[in-house]
Length: 333
Image (cartoon, rainbow, N blue to C red; front, side):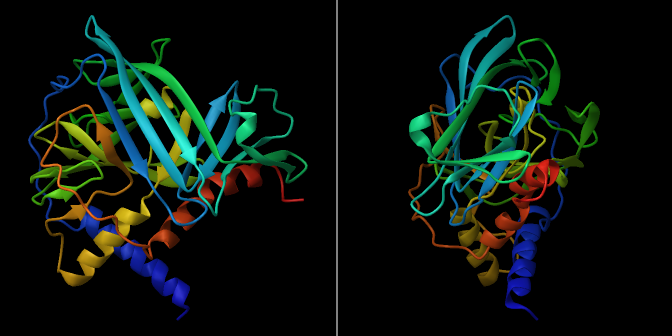
């Protein structure tokens, strides 16, 4: 069998075991009240790093134009701007970074009239790649926006009052409950599982138990994805998220978000090879908590892991962003 096929099969096996292989335990319904750390000035930063061109990507809708953005690395920063009258106003910024080998890709229709939201000093190259699409290569790009969270329900609203679903930032999910409205359709939670293991993030080690939440499959930017996130119930805090629908992003015009972290995946790959099943010390997957003003667990220092075979999984999944726009706007010229 082709070695590439073997590696890809193994990658899917590892992710499946990590995310779905634990014994299901129905979690107690979490309170929909906001956690203690929700106050003005609180920030949470999540990161993912990759060793290949496409660690992840998303579609950013600006002036009704769909702009595809992808690259190796991402940093997502949530900051609570204010809290009043049962609502939290949150600013979220999503920054995509290249590295010494791979740039950031931005692809959009050539006839688009929006004002570029990136800095010209970060631009390496601008190319027409088909009759209908323009590609910009950059060192970095950031998109940002603000939205509101209802502190009783946990639901996200844009600044015009349109609802998008439950915030990704804290728990409050129940099986079979609608947690998001995506493309005008309700999306439900399919599973809430307890993982009786200690997990690691770039920020800290979080003692057991921890929780993983899965949502219904949805069609997003030409691919089938589903909400997937880890939580620590002690702090009622999101430890990582992998893909959409993510209401916090949808409220600022970001859709089809998908990102994986090669460093974390390489550690889990090794652990799953050495042990039968999930064990203490696994890393959460996706875009991982890296910094915060919330006091957290033991803050155990961890050694950055090496390269993972799971880079193949990320590359395949990221055909979603770069590929979809190219197909939509025409064949490469």
